[in-house]
Image 1 (cartoon, rainbow, N blue to C red):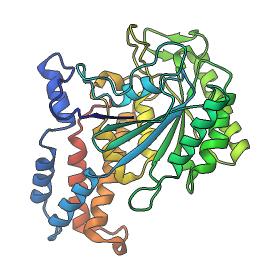
Image 2 (image 1 turned 180 degrees about the vertical axis):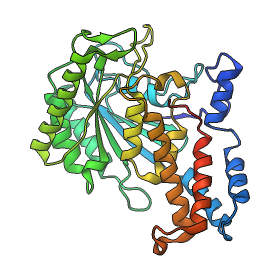
Image 3 (image 1 turned 90 degrees about the vertical axis):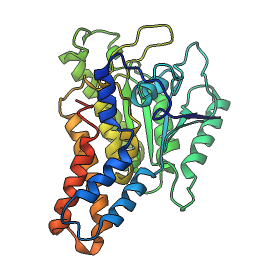
Image 4 (image 1 turned 135 degrees about the vertical axis):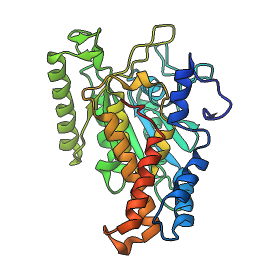
Amino acid sequence: MMKHFSFLNGSKLNSNNAKDNDMISRFIPRDLDSKVEDLICSAPDLCGKRAILLQKWQELRGQKLNIMITGATGCGKSSTINALFNMGAATVTEVAKVGVGVDPETMDITKYEIGNMVLWDSPGLGDGKNADLRHSKNIIDKLLERDENGKLLIDLVLVILDGSTRDLGTSFELINKVIIPNLGDNKEQRILVAINQADVAMKGRNWDYKNNCPEAALVTYLEEKCMSVRRRVYEGTGVDIDPIYYCAGYKEEGQEQGRPYNLAKLLYFILMHIPAEKRLVAAMNANQDAEMWQDNDSKDYGEKIRHSLEDAIGTSLKAAALGAAVGSVFGPVGTAVGTVAGALVGFFGSFFG
């Protein structure tokens, strides 16, 4: 099953006033390519490297990012996808419909394309023996698939756990026996485990609904849950992961949407787990509703996101202009490229707080 979404052109955005529209245009300018071209062409001290930098920029823009998102039924995969990537389009069908009812909505891997980003939405385990065997085979086949360059297709597997339950046995079976053994090299970098529904982890107790954040007792509980997940995965596989907790904020169909918590942290961890040259693709397809990114356990995730983008873009442009043999001594060219990268990241505004 394939669905295509394009939110950059021809879509009506969920903006109620000119201020919102201005924020969106600063986040992803419609004339981004021409702005970058102007930046590179006007930057001093590039020593004839402008054509190379322009070519590298187009390569960055053209990168294909593949993320598999998996987890047991009810963990909140669809709500997470919508929170992270629906681009604030009110009149466009959501990237993934939030499931309702008792049966899993999708029995096979579903492919969603948003620009150059591809999301592979896979059911987890726990739907019965025959279904679990099919899901496991589909996941393994996709993890072993390679692109046209012979590289593994999937850049990152995001495993979502249900924070409202203590029974994570099927999730550990999925992680320890299906995913990690088939990740290839650099396993720690290619998997991210995130615990969703932090707001109901203690049946709704110890959640500050006014400020949309966990109270001290719940923070302790969630941190211990992350440590427990980390320990069990390490004991089962020898792979050391760093789980995080969050709340996607979306409710089931017909209910009022809640505010996400730690969504900017989740995006930052995604950026740091995918290849640096592909971070721009993820950022450009992120949700354009600034309110979605406001509530986090720390106020510096926006700055961390911008630094991760600036570092990735700057490093890629410097490598293209100077070649690997130059090392870290970039001189005037490096300074000019750094200025370009900083200004380029500035195009994304202060969207993530």
